[in-house]
Image (cartoon, rainbow over all chains, first blue to last red; front, side):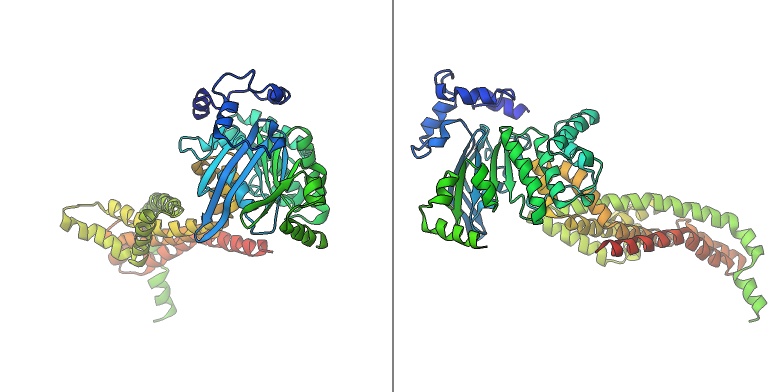
Length: 304
Length: 226
């Protein structure tokens, strides 16, 4: 954790704030700038000049701040200057046709994909800075994958406990106690001793969620978390996500679950061809989309 | 040749009794050799397999050349070269040293290919999931990828090990007193084929359980592929 200590000493925001002060920060958001020492983030941000007037929902401190992301895969230009700013406790839904770059964008947010250019700040940490301890940063960024990616040779408990032991250096007993608590949060404590192959897809995905939240991340990234599931198993995963949201988790979700987006999202971002086409509250994006491409996409999805 | 002559030439208990102490020493030497060269090969193979995950051309091309070279050169030729050829370059190597080097180069290349296939059989998402929780590349390899890789290619690893143990018999050409060498000694002294037959039977008894285990593993793996 030395690297992050260095960074908070460098005046970046939020690194040495203990967990649990989060909501205080939020309620104090209106006073932001008054009770903060000079040189802290609000200054940094206004200095960056990127806090556009068209982002009224960004009143709170952003947890995720991705700016001008470009990504090339060889000759393919899959992200063409994408901005994505996610405030604390916000649930942002990213939708769009396949190949629109939404998954790539998500994977740039924990640097599973390296952006060709742009900047990614998560919880005040510059992910693209060479000096950043990426492995320390990634503990703050939980990720859930379309294909679960549980470790098949470990039990559910072992899956959740691995990073607690090897990354956070906790003793086996403490790691397993925390892992069990995380499994309880997704209502799978009774499956702790099961191997992934003995669990349904929905249960596997909930274990994957537990694996991520056990590290107490500041933000959770979901990459099509229900796309690989049989329809009757989707509900349990969405329920786990709903409960996570009610607990105040900041979430970025790439998904086609439009019903869930309508009900739970604070903001919907519609992407096509590597760029953000339109974004806004779900009622607006779904109810009165401004862009023709958004309308076309939503029409196709609803017909399906 | 009468049947009695046949028995006398290949299955003489008398000869066996005489040759047994020599054969027993040979068996011990063979087991010792195996205990040295199998771990060496696995170690070399693990290093090669881990290097194979590095995509950098400065690693990739030399690695490919290395593996190709030592898989294409016959192990017997390699062994003789190390033992009898290197002294011409001023490098005297003991018989055991030559066997260790030769096997490290040859079987290491084979183990390396087996383990590489194992690593490649693990879906990419496993590494991504591990890295997303903050594990380093090395930790992810050690705790997530390699255990699955080894399990996926376990029959091939055992099969390769079987070959390596059998291949220790080539150490006889550099006068290592292993089982085949000792059997040849006993044969030339007794002027009888029984010691050679005995060596073959000992090899069989030693390795047959491994062969059986391998068959069972392979059958299970086929059954496992639904």
